[in-house]
Length: 346
Ligand code: F6P
Image 1: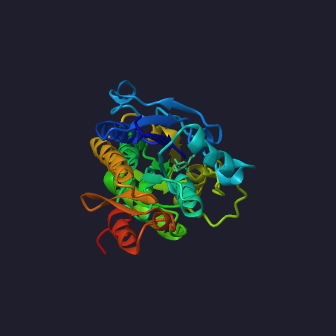
Image 2 (image 1 turned 60 degrees about the vertical axis):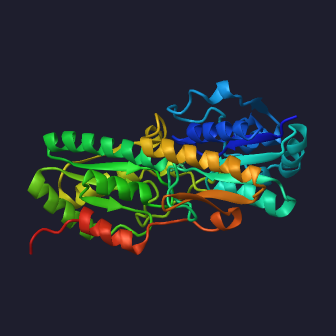
Image 3 (image 1 turned 180 degrees about the horizontal axis):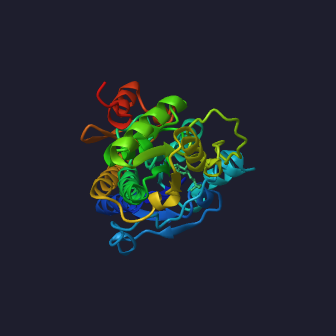
């Protein structure tokens, strides 16, 4: 009988997950394993819910957004009996190993299960936020930014027609990678990131100057940007703030309109960034990390996560990979200031 690998996807979905699932299954089948898909992340381990993942199930999913397995933000460590149920599911579902695809939360659970219970787990990093420190890029990010850049260019068109300043609020949680890359690639006039508080006077000055030159100006703002106001937010099961209610884009637009006297509008791209077909980069990266994860199972290298290092996919320790978030560095902030807070000739 073939050994069985379980595959799960947890946390926010992102384009490239189906590529990674397909990569795991194709490689696992070639190595003589069979695969099952755990339904809706760690929730499916707690309830021992899985469906077969045969060739037919994955053959045609490379270009499909979302995850065919479903996902959730369930944390077994926060549910009564959740860890025991998860450990039992390894037996009930007859799993030889489990490949967990997720961000710091999902992979944090995998790291703990390995450390505390020697579970045979391998991690695959995914997140549109690109905030995992052990890997150069996560799949999902390239697609999310590509979609946001298109949205930004649309906002510039309508903003220029009405002589307005436009604010685009993007996701990305507490790392500013999405806003940074969107701002640079769309030629924004100001980028507000969670890594530093907004300098309101500087922003008003730069936007007024940009608007005087071009009759339009674009601001890209991260959903988690610090506007210097007290916030009272709900937390999810992993202890993260639910940021969508903060309304950063609208608040910034009001501030900008007041300080510049220029009519300003805000748009929130939200989950549109997370859906749709993956870009070429995400298809290739997702596929490669999926294939590598199946190889790591076959090599018995449990407690590891697949990482992109330069142009290579390599194994790193799951525990180290989930220890700290990758936020925007000072070098990137300096580049952002050069490109997206332009000073005219003095
Ligand atoms: O972590 C991915 C992400 O899209 C964040 O950028 C965002 O803050 C969050 O998920 C939104 O979560 P939900 O889909 O649960 O609203």
